[in-house]
Image 1 (cartoon, rainbow, N blue to C red):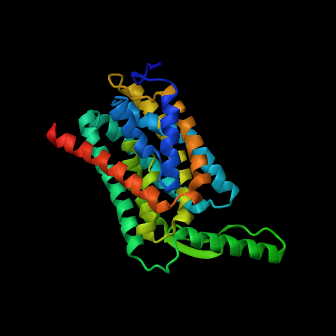
Image 2: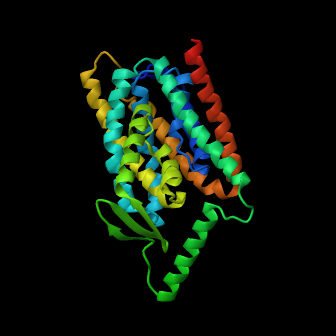
Image 3: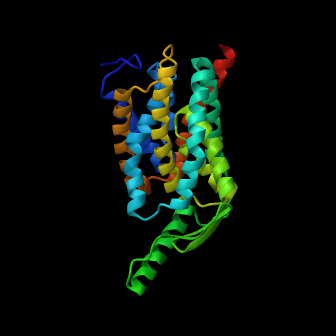
Length: 316
């Protein structure tokens, strides 16, 4: 089957199968699959025009709602944090789209940028693996802590005889946001959240991942927020900014007719359908697969791809 926008010729079964496999593995490691899907499109399918970034965001639009629904159903969406992420990443994604079209249309230059992004994500995974292995054996991981909070929340709900909200906003101002998540209190700077989101949004807009894949590590490392309190916000932020990013790429396509900028909707939808199923199955299977093993596999794949892009730029 030929996809006219991207110029890719491939069986219609390949995109959803590949997206399913990628999303199945990455969702178990708590990482978005979009950052690995783009190298597959560029290196395997030969899809190197600027519209590949927009097509990658179409994948996000189709695949993410299933994950967002799960967070909403479990009451794990911290809405004030979510909207701060959207406010910061949205203009960043639009700026990133302009940079991609105007300054990185050359596939070779864009692969260098993509390689640097992958190196960062891979380094974060390796750092997390090293930190876990060197920490005290008695320390509890984030998932165990989260399960304890959920159990305590359920017990409190049963004791009081009414449903208690999982997330409670205690204070919200232009400078600070304070909220409790399953009974545990957190406080962050709104300015810091928006600033981080803006920077990450620019990178995500260029790369075509919406920013959510790399904003969570910033929140954990810089703001000290547990991953289980920011995962929903990062996912929803990625969805909203991906919608805006695709729309903006469509507008840029009208202004730059000499370049292929608009997304390949057919290809993006096929990837998205596979990603939707992969995310759901990965979430169900996560408890049966050691997270450490998943992260080791991700780090190896990411490191190999990043090294290939960076070395190829300087040797070519």
